[in-house]
Structures are given as C-alpha cells and as structure tokens.
Length: 203
Image (cartoon, rainbow, N blue to C red; front, side, top):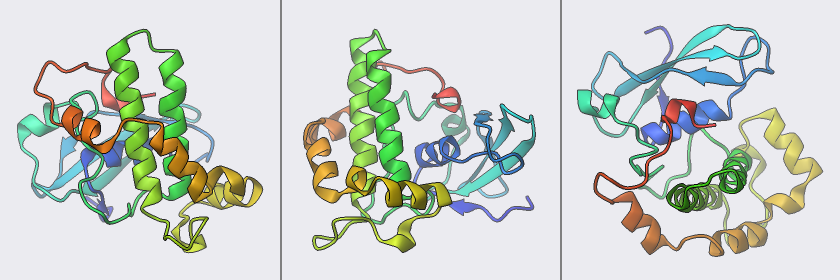
C-alpha cells in the first residue's frame, strides 16, 4: 500500500471526498469509484477509481476511527443511513466550500427523485453536509478561514461568490432542513429504511 492512508471520519466521508476530487492526471474527469476493499489494517479501507474523462485508475486509502468487518465492506453506508461524522472535529478531507457544494448536489437531486423516502434522505444528507461545513466557522467569523480551504477551486469560489458561503446564509439553509433529532433517528433506523443506489455510484 504505497499511499499513506488519509484520515476519514467514516466510509461515507471517504466516498464524498472522492466525489469532490478531480482526476489527478487530467484534472477534469469525475471519478468512477469501485466498491471498498480491506487494507493492511482492520481500520484501513481502499477504493479504486477510474477517471471518466481519461480512464486513468488510482487507488485511494483511508484510515477510519474504527475497524471494519467483512460485513462492513459489503454494506452500502449511504443507503443504510450511516452518518458522515459523529465528532465535533472538522473534516481533514473535505473543506467547507466542498461541503456546501455536496449539500447543493443533494438538494438538486430531490427534484429528480420520485421516491418520497429518497427525497427525505437527500434532505437529511444535505443537512449533514451543511453541519460539516459549519464546523469550520467561529461565532465571530462570517466566512471560513483561508487555511481551511484545501482546493484551489474552493479558494476561487470563495473569492468570486463569498455571499454563498457566509455563515448566516448557511445557518438559514440548515435551519430549513431536518432537525438534529430527525437526522439522528433516521441514521439509526433499522434495516428496511429507504435505500439508495450503491454509494460508489452516488451521483
């Protein structure tokens, strides 16, 4: 395993990181992500990606907070309502601008989704993404700090459209989405809750 594993708060967070990561070779293509595979330690998981634009393959490795079982590797964490994170620490993989983008993608998917259950879950996932974005803000900071931005595209977006990432705007958007109690209840739903397509094909 040549690459040092990146630190992720969950398998879901790792999958979302790959959603906002462009191909390293051409910088344009979106990544098609394989099912997860076990790493050289119980808490390490890997994903092989293929660029839709240039076809280059790459394997990404992530270190998770807890060990994974074979059943965990077979599970679909997104459709099984797994949380993105259960800690207050901001993500080390995805920056606040990227979290806002992911929330918007989830909300845009609502109009194209006929299932009421999937629409409900998309709103919940959008709420979780905004929760992750807001972890980077402080009460006296209306915009995320420059050193929290991990990608040049995020820095460019913040410079061009700062109003989109203002803390009051994000807080208002978050308030219009499911409350924490509903999020927690759905996250802990037993099997049989509304299911989505396989998470490595989430978009």
